[in-house]
Length: 186
Image (tube, helix red, strand yellow):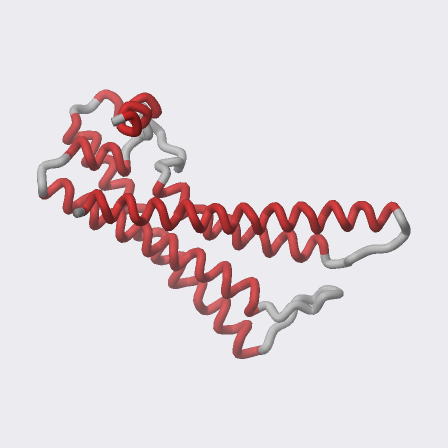
């Protein structure tokens, strides 16, 4: 059951990554159109503003995908020298630290959005974008990442209590590409 939830979260995050990737492609198209129009003496305007919003939103939403794909950067000097229980302990410690950090960030991101909504803040640019629009997407990405971190931590703890250390290492440890290929071949 726990592994099915992991797989479901991974599938959901892959879908999110696809949508975010399409957003990035649309942003690239917008920038290319802007470049072409500038060559002809015209402009769409707001390229810097829009690409900045897209960068913030895609980063926030992409972190959940990176978590589920075990793609976050890790320092493995000590971890590789430990037995399975030691590696799992360090992985859980890392997940707890990341969960706490991301929950705090998501919690602290809300006042930024709330202030923009309350003040009806707009970007100080040609587009005068209502800031609640990109900030809502950015905030939602942080909340999603916080939920993913907490869910992965709790699911990993459940696997530890079931005595399935190998499954924990496969879900929150360092991604072993050879083991992944063997698992997919089954």
